[in-house]
Length: 351
Length: 166
Image (cartoon, rainbow over all chains, first blue to last red; front, side):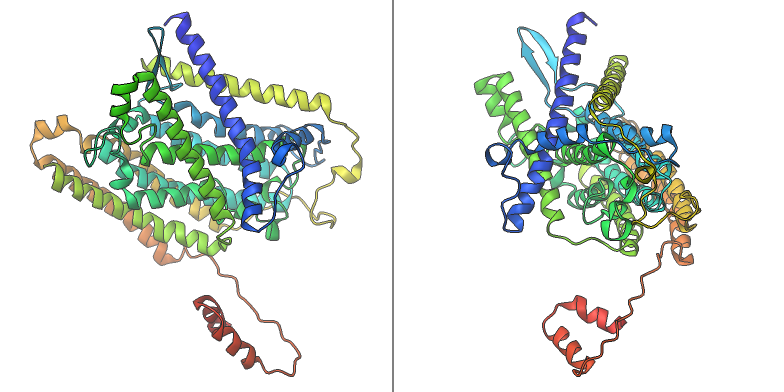
């Protein structure tokens, strides 16, 4: 461990923080623009050219708003709620492999903050902690609507976490590793004679379907946005929040969206791999291949973020009994069936 | 190797904490602070809040949490199983019978837990109460069947289902 290693990691951490915050900020702009497009109107267009400064204006507004701390609220927990939400949302980005490594003047610069060999378990640990942020915040507000929203969020998240975990088990059976770097590397092999196209989606279509539905539920996005369902619960778990603490809750939602899009891209859609990666590496050099791979990963992530928004403005909200039925009675049995299918497939083809 | 990785995560956590602290302090320095009793009261649609907000809620949520714990433990046991299942080293050491045996063991394990899910399902713990829709009475010279006929004529299956329920 030398000083360059630590310095490199620090730079990478700051860049990743900046990128995830920036993506989250511009997701709010993208969401409103896309909503405008779907509903045949313009969306924000006053702040800067095409309204491109709108997220900055919104962020500034949150800083300058007065903060209201309700009298009966539990102050320490009231502050802990949004902080925990924000922190857990950011923490999951630490293990995403953005590429293999860059070769800068003979020094290897690994494009991943931490290659832990229990990568997927780490994600589940951190994602589960996210429930506490909402639950603590909703309970500490001392408001009946907040509490109901928080309880709904908790029970929805734990229900869908199970199906998500089961769908990922099938993926691990295929790859034989929990490390995200290794899962990405496995997907770089060739398929149909084209290098970098051995994506897991071709082996796990059902698993991916379960995963994406659960990702929507975990992010509390429409059609599963019952925790903050405004027609029933005023504002859900963040009814009592204002100023920057409200900002953190909203921000955490968009960061979660970014993170789950990244995981969908890494786990099922090849991560930083793209068709013809070996050809590029042989002709243009290693660094060029890695940078194009980074661009490919971001293109996939942005597509999934767009998909999140597309669904939001297309599908209406579920009813609570439908939500529970889908999670427990359809997705969990389906995920177990998927494990069985994968196991039989491996037995037939590998032996 | 792994120590370095966890150091990376720790640094990440530190950076995140620092970011939160800085944002909260900037926000505290910039925002106005003029509290009054009206502002600080709980917002429940403009009504004065009755009683404490931290009420006891539907015990169904508790049952769901219990079943969740059961399945989460199953999940934790499945993670190491999934890793050794297709491990080439294990297959080489134990021959082609390895995958079959591993699969069978897992099936027995999942079957026992699946029984738990089936039990909860049969007992009705997974069935949430459906909302009862009561159609509003309207005093109109046009009979109700006319409306229903129009609904059935111009709709997909969803409205038809609702009509049957009503």
